[in-house]
Each structure stands twice: as C-alpha cells, then as structure tokens.
Image (tube, rainbow, N blue to C red; front, side, top):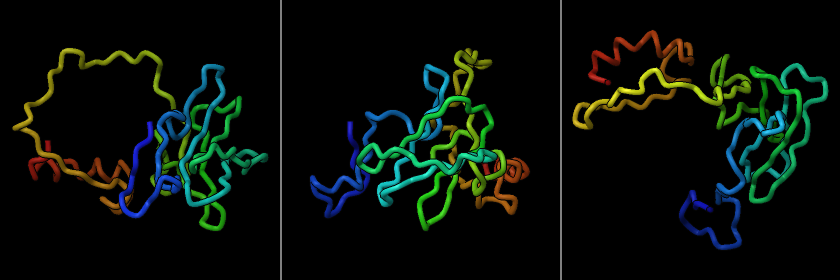
Length: 165
C-alpha cells in the first residue's frame, strides 16, 4: 500500500514523495533469525550509511530498496547498540523512527525491542471519556532546557495545573 505524503505537482513518475508501507517498518527491527534490520526513508539522497557506535567497521553502506528506502541487516547487534544514519554532506542523524533515544533527541538512537509478550498491568482499565480529555502536544527536544524526557517529567505538575490529562 502506498500513501502520498504531499500534494501538489507530483506526478506518477515522481516517487520521491511516496511512502511504501509494504516494505515493512522503519527504524531498527528484529528479524526472526536474530539479526537486526535497519531501514530508513531518505528520498533526497542517493546513498545512506549506517554508523554503529563503537563499531570499527562502520559506517557501512545501506542497500537502496528503491523509492527512497535504504536497508542494512547484521547479526550480533545487541539491545542498546547506538546508531545513526549518515546522509552524505548533510551529516549523521538519529533515527526518525527510533524507539529509544537514551541520550536525547539529538544523540544517536539505540536499538530496543519490546518483550514478545508483555503482559499489560492495566488489562481492566477502561480509560477516560472523550469529553474529559485535553490533549497537549509537545516536542521533547524543545519543551525544556534539558531537551529530554527528564526535562518534561520535571514539568508534569505544570502541565497538570493547565488541565492536561
């Protein structure tokens, strides 16, 4: 399934603005064989490299999959392994689909996988009624001086005072 992200003058032959969801998830994902697959969508650069923190073999070239997608798979990647995507002269960046940013949003991403069968401690919880909800969207990297979840946590009382549920 393809989903157009942008409208405008794009044509059928303009594939730089199309997300192909049939390739699978973006970011770092565990393969059934135990290896880790890294995938990123970077339609504006022809070559992407994966930088693995502390790995003398990196950066390694990622394999273009077409339509702006790039992938790389490797065995022996451990939970917590730091990584960034390098986009030529633009520089190296954390994974925009990262599940874990242990040192903040501008630092390398880290590989993390949820437990295969995580039991929910809230199985009987029914949630709040829609009428009682107030949503507040914030960007963790800019909300506080720290630019981290810890910085947001320090401000939770302030958000609650605003009525955020």
